[in-house]
Length: 160
Length: 102
Image (cartoon, rainbow over all chains, first blue to last red):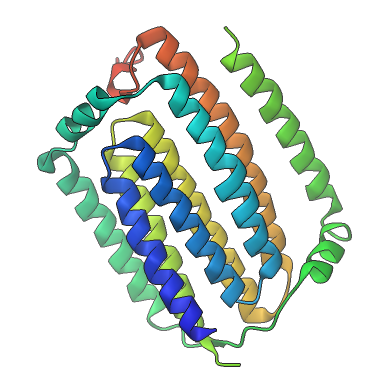
């Protein structure tokens, strides 16, 4: 399980770097799908198989297909790739990337003092769903209202 | 079963979050910005799952499901807005949207 975790973590970080440096948008989307699948493997290695399956189905499946449809509608060809390359000038991204790197270093500095080991015990569908329809049932209802609101507003916004 | 130090999971979540932040700050194509937002949401969900694995509880996984729902709704609305923006301005450059500049 340790092996699985570190390999998947490396794949996730490398492919996420691929997402933010790509200039071709479809290639970036495929890197993002790879990153989400790698995070799903991380979830599996941490003993959360239900969440890993949902990550693969909902994130890498449904949400990314939504992105793909919109990219098809936006009709982006070679000229947008060239435009992206022109927009990615080093002087534009160097400062924000440096500031984000400082934030990351601070985060790692805080985490340095945490020294606890996880022993991955599988917490499966039964525990999650017992909790979901027990104490968290109100949150599930609110999530359904949120999804309905998202559906209505997406229909309204995308209408001609 | 071998154990994984919890800080490694949290460090992975932090790295992914910082990478998503770099994407949001540096890209000018609004579709890339939305994709980087997805990366950030996913990283925060990863932190929840790591913490729930540490305690052996399912609460963190429930929170991840809520984040998943939020991400789905956010992407649906965001992509609808992108389509409207493309119809109005014929571009996906976020610098074009400067009508509220004082």
